Amino acid sequence: MTATEVRPEQGGTAGRLRAHTGTAVLVLGALAAVAAVAATAARGVVQPSYALVFGTVIAVGEMARVTLPDGRETAPLGAAGALAYALLPDVHGTVSRHGVLQVVAVVGVALLAGTLPHVARGRAPAPAYVARRLLAAGFAATLFRPLYATGGLDPVMARGWAYGTFLVLVVLLTSLCDAVAAAIVRVGGPFCPVLLAELRALCAGLSPTERIGPDGEGTGNRACGLTGIGTAVGATGMLIALSTSALGLWAVPVFCVPSLLVLLSFRRYTATRMVHRQTVDALSRLPEAAGCGSPGHAARVGELAHAVGVDLGLGEVELRELAYAAKMHDIGQLALVDPVPGGTTLDLPEAEQRRIARLGADVIRESGVLDRVATIVAAQADPYHDDAAGPPPPLASRIIKVVNAYDDLIAPTDDPRARREVFARLRADAAGAYDPRVVEALAQVLERTD
Image (cartoon, rainbow, N blue to C red; front, side, top):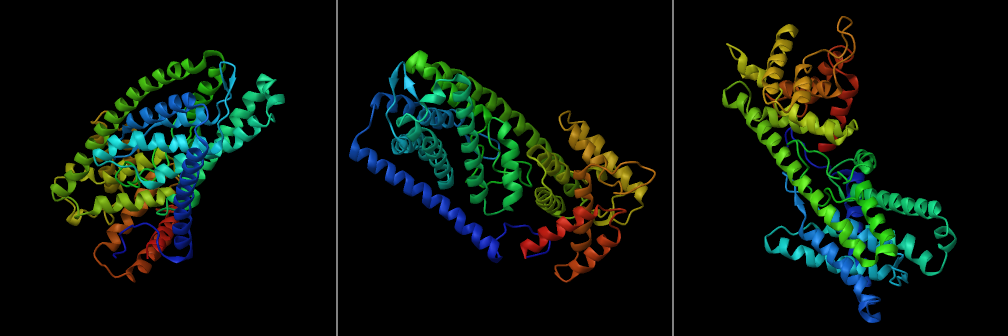
């Protein structure tokens, strides 16, 4: 492997441990499904009409999954239906009597039914997707159903504010459980940054478990994806469960129809993201096609910049913008009368580097949709510390500056020993031209790929 390649962390004790814990999540989900279906079949389905209605909602939600530009899929309606069934107290005065195992069984069978059309089209979900859905539903049911069945919630339910607070707490704990499971099954990345990204994303309706990858979209690990229990999904599930007391089972379609309409917004979002992705892909290919860049340079910088951004704790939107900017960081060279030999701008005068960066930013702004990316590209040649320039450039710009310099210096050779010399040069300029924190983050990323 060359020094500029980035691949998932596989070596060492930490990598092997992550692999085992990821497998444990899959095994736990499989055992829960088998035990739940077997127990429910042996005892019979309690209140089958309730199970049928909520199972249908979950199945329809899975059938109506929205496919994002990178191939990931999201089923917020199915997740909300599963949560509502787990938290169902009564239906128009009739107490619900189903237990934890029946919740897992109904969710599992509904997932299977809703997934069959996708399987027929060759788009079967990853096992970890199913495992997480089952474990999240089982976790929520475990927190709610035993207490409800034994009357332990009666004093709480007598006070509306207390009951509402309890349900919110259950949803938050379920979200945390799902976030931890998502971070565990993502063996290909550092655990803490992924978990922090999950926790930051709880305020969104969906959980961006798959961090934005070097192509500007998801990481392609479809074991995760936008399938978590976020606030929008959690709120919908709670509202359905609470409304059944007054509206009966009619509460289910009342809340599900608007949710289906929301999915149309996701489709528009997908179309917008697709336009952005196509714009970035088209622009990023231009320098190499015109002979203004070394083959594969933009892709390598994009991969390393993404990995460094993950290590430094950038959020989903920041990572996406970083990935876009990294892929297009050399586009300003198209405006040069005399192309830079090999596309390497590292040894150019600082003023010329800045001029090329700003020319590239002007090109990107012409797209009309990537102004923030253009700002990152414009500042990529600015030094980290410049007494005359005021505050340092954005972190994304500093990451691109370091990674671009590293790839320019290391590209002529595949000798891993050259890395020490490259980092000696980067560290010599740290706190001046380069952000020392970014330099060390890059060193850690490359160390994990060995």
